[in-house]
Length: 409
Ligand SMILES: [Zn+2]
Image (cartoon, rainbow, N blue to C red):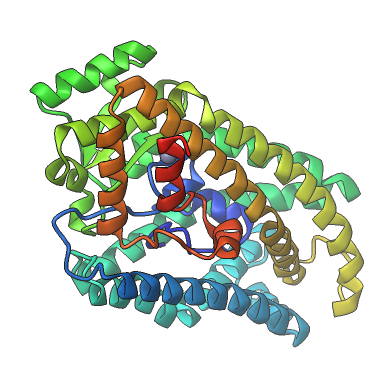
């Protein structure tokens, strides 16, 4: 649950993705740059070698963690490990739903423990090695535990509802499950900026001053309400800087990292802000949600068929057998491997559109270019990744391409 940078590949199920809290991409949030952006004053390690190296290590970890998830799941199911865990839990609880909750919690903890070294290496060690982090080890642990806890509070009730549908809807369970996930994503999008993000960051309104007046002027131009502009203390965790448009309905807001506000010029901040206003005005959150919903219904339909066909391979006879559910997560994971490049493609198109919008609205092409270069530098973002890597893994176009696009080339 560290950063959502381009190279972080989620290997978990849709449901987990829906609630991976600190990763703002899971709730409709459209950041300026991939995960955790920039740290302006921090120039030390950004030689092109270390940039490439950092990107390579992150990508490798990402692929490795994904592979590990698939491998662990197959081994656990195929060796009867999940059946054993189910039997243990039946010794503790009588009710099927209670058994389910214990079962999921046990596997979740197991996964957490097994992947802890990787999480630590990626989320703490590397960030410090490349001088990107402001976090103490204790804070990293606390944030991780908090993230896990909030995730569990959101996830476990959802799992119960989904299990209920699998149990009661015959072979059409994927329809109510898809509907439930859709409702959940809407509610989460609406509430996350108000209820969940504040658990991780402190938000404060922008101070009065020149910057505020110019941002408000931009807001007025696009008809966005001015209450929706906040600064959050991202600097407690990272030197990277970021900004995002987040939420829907009354909860929609633009959030600016304090690192951005502290280290970028007012003109640069204005253009970054205008980029986020672009996401708002062009309704990118809604487009993404529509795409996500269509994709999740399609994926649930497809995985329902494969899941039920594959049950017999592992000796299961019914889709609502608790020990078989990790298989369902596995197939959903396979499906998301296929669709992630598609949603990344859509997201990159949104970024180009928001960039164009930012230049038009602010009329400050050069300041925006400076801001992009600065962000890449402080976030140690690879300005020109391999095209295949970008196509598969990156939700944002490379900085080199964005600069060319802004230039109109
Ligand atoms: Zn953006």
